[in-house]
Amino acid sequence: MPGLSYPTLTDGVVALRPWGIDDVDDQLAAFADPVFVRFSDWAPDTRDQLVDRLQEVERARENGLGIHLAITHPDTPSHALGEVALSGIDDTNQRASVGYWLSPAARGRGLASRAVRLIARWAFDELGLLRLELTCGPDNPGSQGVAVRCGFRLEGLLRSHMAFKGGRRDSLVYGLLPGELLS
Image (cartoon, rainbow, N blue to C red):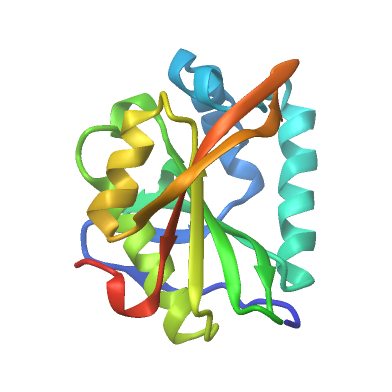
C-alpha cells in the first residue's frame, strides 16, 4: 500500500489527528505513567527518543505500513489524550494490528473504545482491510475491555509470544472482521 493520507476522524467526543513536535512533552509525561510502563515494553526517557519515534511512525505512514494518531477532544485538539494506531498493515492479506494508550487523566471514560472504533471503521471502509488484530497481556484488563467493547473476539492465548522486559510475555489475541465492529 503506498503512503497513507491522514484521515479526518471524529465522532463528536474524540477526534484523531497526526502527531506533531508540539506533542512531545505530553507524550513524555504519559509514557512516565506507572500503568503505561507496566504494560509497555517501550517507555522513552528523553525528548530525543520521542522525536525519533515521531520520525519512525511518519516513515511507516509514508510507506503504507502504519499510521499513529493522537486522540484528542474535538474542542481542544492541541491537547493529546492518547494514541490509536494501525501497524503492520499487510496489503496482501488485508489485515493490520490495532494499538492504543491513554494518558492517566483520560482513562475510564470510553475514549480508547471510541478511538478504536473510528480507526477500525476507517481501516475497513477506506483501506479495504478485512481483519484487524489486537494483542495484549493477560494481566491487562483495561485493554481487554476496550477490545470487547469494540467487538473484537478473543481468539486465543499466544504462549511466550514476545520478548518483554528481559523475558518473555504471553499475549491474548483478539480479531475483528468488518461486520463485527460494535457501535
